[in-house]
Each structure stands twice: as C-alpha cells, then as structure tokens.
Length: 333
Image 1 (tube, rainbow, N blue to C red):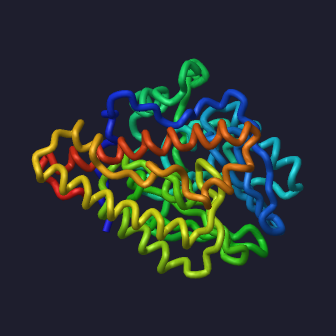
Image 2: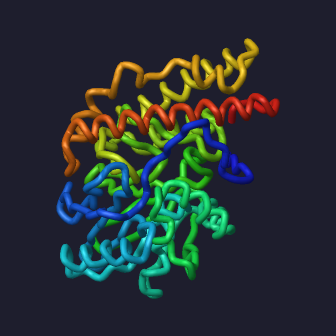
C-alpha cells in the first residue's frame, strides 16, 4: 500500500542544523565491493555517495549528484573505471541532491526510478528552496537555470535492468524517508544502494514525508524480499551491514513512535516533547557506526563529533514530525 503525503515537512526544530549537502570539497572515492560493483563514497561526511555497476555490455550509475559539476565527476569516474558505456542512471529518491545532476547526463542515458519519485519531481522552486537550507552558504552553486530532468522509465514496485551477464534489481518497498524510495540491488554481490531509505545501523534517519508506521512496513518488506542482502551503500554516511541496519531502524522507529505518543498524550508541548523524549544518541554513537566513520578523510574525532551532532538534530526533527501528526489528530503514519 502506498502512502503519499502532500509535501515534505518544511518546519524545523529550534536551532536545528541538518546535513551539509554542499558539494564544496566533495571527492568521490571508488571502492570495488565485487568485480564490476563499485561504491563511489564521499570523502567528507555526510555528503552524497553514488555507485557504478558494470555488466558485460553496459553500466548503470546510482544517483546523479546535486550539481552538474558533481554529475561530471561521477561520469568521469565511470569513464576511468570501465570501458563499458553507461546506459542507465537510477535515482534512489527525488531529492535534488540525488537528482539535480540528471540533466547533466547525456540524453541517450535512460533515467529510471519509482513512479512515486517521478510524481514528486513536480515543484522545482520548492525543491531548490528546501535543499538550499542544507547548503550552508553555498546556495549559489545550485544552477539558476536549473532544469529537473525527470525519469524516462518508471516502475511501481519492482524492475530489472540487464547490463549483459549482470542483472540489477530496482525495488520500491513503500514509503520511508520519502514516498518513492528506490533500492538498487545487485543479487549476485548481495549489495544494495539504499539512498535515504536506509543508512548504516546507528544512524538517525529523517521522517520527511510521513510517519514511522508505513516506514516500518516498508523496511519489513525489504527484509522479506532481500533475505541474502549483506552490504548497504546508503545515500549518506558509511556503508553498513544490511540486516543489522534494517533491524536497528525498525527498533528506533518503533520506540520513537511510542515515546512521542506517550509525551503528546500526557499534554507535553512539542518543545517539551523534544526535550524529554529519550534519545539513543545520549550515550554516543553505536560502535558499528564508529567503525564506518574511520573511512573519512578528516580527523577521526572531528568526524565523530560531527556525526553525533547530526544524529541529535535528526532525532529532534523526527520527534517534531511525529508530534505534528498526532497534533493534527492523525495516526503517526
């Protein structure tokens, strides 16, 4: 069942600082996870990761970057890493940091995503405004004449792309961070690119369009559909163990839903709820996440402090999102 909210929540908690999406200083570092299966990992947290999947006849890129310059960096890397032509580009979400670069890809490259993602690529001005809030002084890098190239091919819940000797699966399990989250899965390698839908265990996610209940349903559907999944490459942050990450996020959302509902129903204001709601980050970051953060090209303590602050901020945003649903008399879904 699809739950498609009207629009991403624009409200933010007092003092909120979200993930820095500016591409300044971004360098994508290739990591070959299996033959022809490469994660393109951001050198600076928590900027966008990408991917390159190569078959005998063609290649597929995962996500397009936030600007045309980032898109060109991705395409240049693909040229360096394989002599197979790039024929496909998969968008894991409609968010501009993953899709604004679509237009910088040649028109003969087929852009693929879920039908719901395409449906949400309808208001460029609003999308630029929302993502500009996470550019921290670099808003001018978003092209003034930006166009939003929409997916050429869409699917409802499942699609396959044949690269020649390698099949890539695209899944839409239901709403999560957004209504159209798309997972790109390489079955033989047991690796999935999960965009904003699923990050490494211990990372706070964002309830931007909808609530925890449908998100939990979607995660459960992913766990059932991909029983052999081992590694995830998220849209932001370090890689992680797939099953552990699904379990962690389901548990987090379930606890958060219960805690916010309890505080709301006891008469707490939204500010009091944000202040009093328990946080899994009060004792620091999960050891599994700490291990993944060691890959970034910054002093370790700086990365840890930055990620911990980000998780605290995203946790507060999630509390706010659930509280507003309850305040409106709606089930947190």
